[in-house]
Length: 175
Ligand SMILES: CC(C)(COP(=O)(O)OP(=O)(O)OC[C@H]1O[C@@H](n2cnc3c(N)ncnc32)[C@H](O)[C@@H]1OP(=O)(O)O)[C@@H](O)C(=O)NCCC(=O)NCCS
Image (cartoon, rainbow, N blue to C red; front, side, top):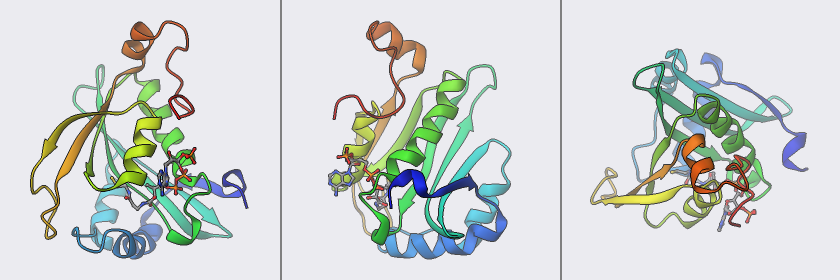
């Protein structure tokens, strides 16, 4: 099954328990979010949460928060995860495409934190034009792992620095 054979839709309250279940598998030492946190996240009008479903079964999820003034917002990736059995089939890329489309449609920069030892995620973010801004020591709890803060410039800045491509949001450049 390829990534485009999964159904995509925005996440809602009824998906929160399955998200929490996936978090426990994907982030065991780093304070995985429980169901209630997802319920609150989904309810926030400036958050965008999307999931990929295999026959009504949620196998990947991602969330983006919009912050700051509505006329000039910034974005932050709050979470993204793919069921281990469904990784490396392009689902992370598909969900990132959706999040980046939202940010680009507002011409906003995107920020995120990622464990410095999380190479799969760092590679994926780099493919979408993120670069490392800073290292935050002891960022994750309870593991104490360090984080990189990464940033993806707003669409207009990417266009300014790369007049040829216009800064594709499909993650295909650089990889
Ligand atoms: C990071 C994650 C979401 C990627 O999801 P995925 O569906 O496996 O990713 P995709 O198949 O769409 O791959 C997208 C790109 O990510 C990178 N990537 C993914 N897995 C990788 C791995 N094991 N090693 C190196 N690069 C990897 C590659 O650049 C890949 O592009 P390519 O296939 O053209 O090489 C997934 O590994 C995951 O859920 N990890 C645990 C949760 C997590 O760490 N989330 C991020 C927290 S900041």
